[in-house]
Image (cartoon, rainbow, N blue to C red):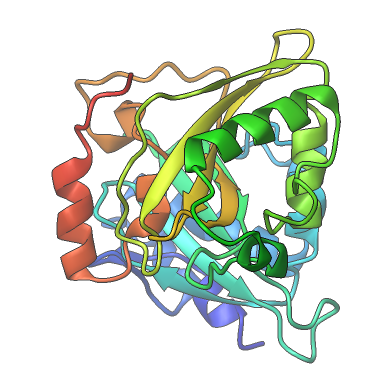
Length: 276
């Protein structure tokens, strides 16, 4: 039952507290109570698709969250209001021993979940053997364009093993085959250790009904390290830039960057970097 001790969510100084019952206290913010029930549902293996407090997710994301049942979770501090990040690790006594994933939840002022993301943790990014064998500088923007082309064409998104790719990544990317993509002109810096630059790709499906942004990470030698999906957005939610972090289209990368107060400060200073 080790994982259940963090499944309840009481936010204090950006951390999850211990007891689920505490989230019922009147002075606990609405978003903390919502986060508590969702985190507990993940731990207990509930049918998340049937819950009213979670907007519809990609089928592959539901399947991946189901694998986290019974796994331990640890909260990460963030530099943003109403954002909860939990890193999940599945121990030997779980059904998927060795699995690790990071979930991010962003809430509106009324405590409603408006964005949700799940990816592999970003604190252990490393180049693949194929990337190491590539040698020399690999021109990150060219790789980002090659990735966009491969996704739109329904081809191997790992580019022959150049990019590390989870099954969850492949499942989500496959939905954009036959669609279109756009690589943002400006790359971004990041507070993630070992990561030098991040290139962003906007993906659009064939029906132009679904769009997601993917972040591709590169080290100081321009070798690709992996990718992450920005958190999905509730289609019924309209961001209001006047109302704090959950009311603005903050780049999802900032939700995963923060690892300590110094990193949080760096992330906060760059939140207002304009998009292209």
